[in-house]
Amino acid sequence: MLLFLLALGVAKGTPAITEPMQDGDFCNRLKVTGTGAFEVGVSVKDREIALEYDSFMTGDGDLEMDSGTVEAQRAAKLPGMGNGSAVPLNLWEGSKITYSGKTPMVGFKHIRSNSFWGGIGAEVTESFAVTEMERESGTYFASTNPASYITDPKKIAQMLSASPVHTVAIETKNAFNGTWQTDAKMHKLLSKDVKVHEAFTGKFEVEKTLKFHENPVQEKKQLGCDGIDC
Image (tube, rainbow, N blue to C red; front, top):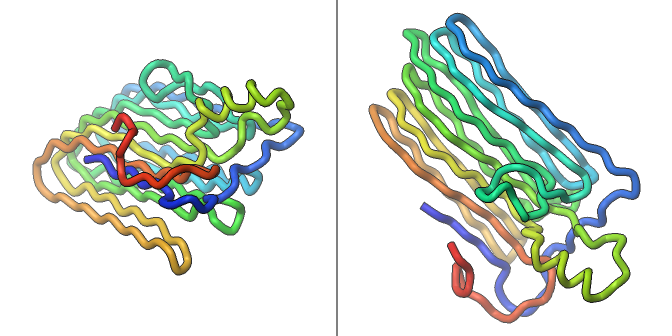
């Protein structure tokens, strides 16, 4: 399933955030194989780029996990998004997980583009409680203007054409025994209100892509995925 939302009409969307002069970044990589109790969590809140990201997982059983989280205040060509990414992002998270145990593995992921900090007001929450799971997932976030300090008009145009700002997105492929759920919403005062809810309990295989995007510049009227390779 793909949910792709674009700002409609000729009015300007939320402006892209100007990148800070002094860059800050964060990287966390974890690879683990074993049996026993575990807790794994990452939290990133960055007002400079309107980002809120939280991820937590706990369980007691057989676990194989390979994960990485990268955040950059200046949009960078971070790993992920398919081809090693020629797309400048502010956050990328990817993981591969295999779990089995009598005790359910419980976890959640939440990402938000905070409108009070200059974001688009979109957020996605994914949660699960499973006794068996094979999972591959990715999270993508972009909010800053990668051409903030470029003066050449041609170079500015090139950078902006490659930038996915403003974007909040997740991709996941799950096979599980238990409960898995996603909730997403985007709210624009007096103009837009979108909500998504999906929940499955039992033995399921699920593939999902969910993406919110608002172009920060003027554009001609566009509907859904028209003109976009979804």
